[in-house]
Length: 399
Image (cartoon, rainbow, N blue to C red; front, side, top):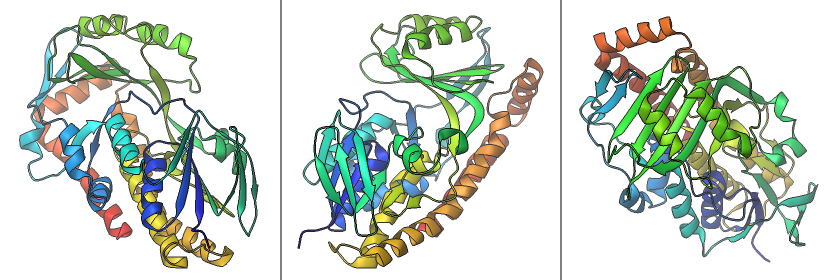
């Protein structure tokens, strides 16, 4: 008898982590990805808490540390008038707190390399039809393949196609937080080097992280009363219109963006689903419970969720054994029960932080800056300690 098969939609962090953990549980996997290549750009991320604990179990920490970016001293917050608002030395402020800073795409690349010998990755491929039954799920792919699978996993991101097909339309589960963000790589036209600098102003914040080979990772977050898809042809003009009064470094760096560069613009939104499963379909990562980058735990919870899912499937049916309908229902129910309390707490934290994430008015911006100057260590440490408490609760629930 052959081992069970899972078809995974999406070759991002959640999808590739699921393939890795399911292989450890004795499953076969086919990962389908709509794009012709793995994503090669993305914002910086910090891996801590449940995410760091999960990659440590996977034995990936040494590899991740080779592509991690070291703590580079003060993070400078500078006004558009070229005055330093604040300098924060996270290295000293957060002594004893463990995390890894890296590019999101490096984590995807390493997960891809780690799963290369144990999964069937099909790029430029989509799921065209499926038949969800109690005894199995038939999946048809755009490359003409027809697969008899035991589980279909939706790991295709916050705007999941599979979620719309199986559960509800986006309008019924996406909860915009009133912000949009843009992320891209760009030449270091302003000679930042290996620094980390932010240019906050009312309604928008622009951050730059020095990479290698004379490039920067750029991230803009701004308040927005509109949401939804922004066509690629309109993205550069939108950023230019938002930064007309920004610091010269912001405008110069945007002007240096190559014409063919990948420029990601999306809403900061959470996904709220009362259930992450329907028969033999289960949602994972951002497709199930997007936390937004405000939480700082989206990637970490995607990694942890993949681990818990594989663990519960193996517990219910045994290593490499195909679960029957009752066993599958038990595994998916326990996966939900272990994860959902932590997800709900992290989403609540995002809602609480969202109103002050980027002050909307000049007056609110001025008051925030006064408070930061008066007691930067207290406020920032309180913010991180709040996050650490949420991480500790999540880790306890996932053990």
